[in-house]
Image (cartoon, one colour):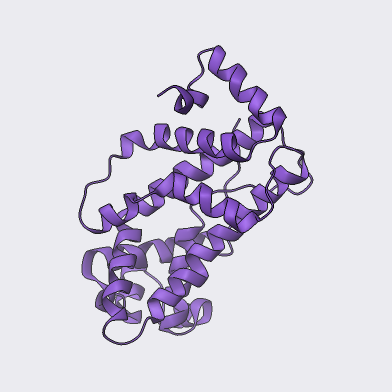
Length: 228
């Protein structure tokens, strides 16, 4: 089963400009992201940039939102989840999250925010939290709430459940990558499957646990965590 991409708050043309702005950031740091430089690189006018994004903070906010939108989550109002579709949505979210966090853009943004926080406040760090992490968190929480509504997940505190899911997916991997460890992207699929399986074992209802046990007996990798 596939999952639809998130609906972007930006037009395709604006997305292309934001992608170019992120490329400039990775290649040259924050000083490379100027209105004039971006206008040249993206082949657009400075007036268009101001109209679309406002000032520099608005541009940074849009860049972070665009980056966060690459992490897909459940966005289908009215869809009734099954064990299979919930698992699929969670695994897509987990793998997207790992791939985005491991990407040059996210690593550059986070390193830049860490460096700025000790010099001139944490404006970029605040934007990363508000327009990046919290945007992702909100959509993922909606998926967990839908899983509970449809009788597949049980938890008293949705925030605690989500923190558990995030921790199982990411663990200390992001910190190690920020410190220079090369990401093993070829292992992200297996890592996502293992994390989701562990999460469902902790928070799944009897319907979900029965599905996990059945998958294990049939030799499916979905529940390998219980046998490693």
